Length: 280
Image (tube, rainbow, N blue to C red):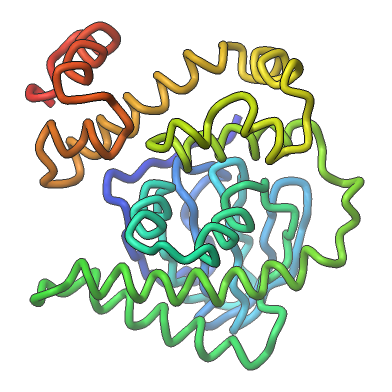
C-alpha cells in the first residue's frame, strides 16, 4: 500500500536535489501537486504508467494519484503543493465564470494524463516563471503576501488548465468511468457547498444529466452515505479547516460554509465533532 503524505498549509513549495535516488517511497497525498523538473532526467512512475521525464517537464497530481521517481541523471525538483480549499478560496473571491470552468477541469476529474502537462511549448516559460514567483512569495513575509500568492496561483491555474484541456481533448468521453463521475458530483457539491440552490437534487441532476430520482441512489451507492449526510460532513470538514488555517471568526466561518447562522453552526458542529467551534 502506498504511503500517504499530508500538508497543513493551503499552499507550500518544496525544492530539492536527488542525485541517485528520489528519497521517498511510492505515495499518495491529501493535496494537489505540480512537480517541475528543473534539471535532470529519469522515469516517473505514475499510477500504472512509466513515463520518461526530462528538464522542462511539469507533472500534475491529484489526491487520487500515486507516484514515485526513478533517477537516471541527478535531478532538481520544484514542487508546489496546494489543497482544494485554495481553489475554493480563489473561486469565491472571483465571480468570473471562467474560474468555475477551470475548477471543473482541474478538480472534477481524476488525472488521466500521466505525461508532462506542457502541451504548448510557449507556456513552458510562463509555468516555470510562475513557479519561481510563487516560491519567492511562500518563502518571504512581505506586505500583501497572501494577496500576491492568490493572484499568482490564479495565473498558474489558468496556464495549467489551458494545457490540461488541450491534452484532454484527445481522450474519448467513453474513458470517463463511474468512479470519475461520482468524483465529479461530490466535488461539485464541495465547490458549491455554501450555495443551497446549487446543491439541490434537481440542480445536481440537471448539471450532470441525470434523473433526479437517481441522484440520491447514485450518491448513496458510490459514496456510502446519503446526500444529506455528505453535505453536512463537507460543511463541517471545510469549517474545521477554515477555523484552523484562517483568521476567520465563528460567524464568518458559519456564513462561508452555508449555515443559517452562528447558533445553528455551533449546534451542528458540537453534535458531530464533539467540541465547540471556538475550541478548534
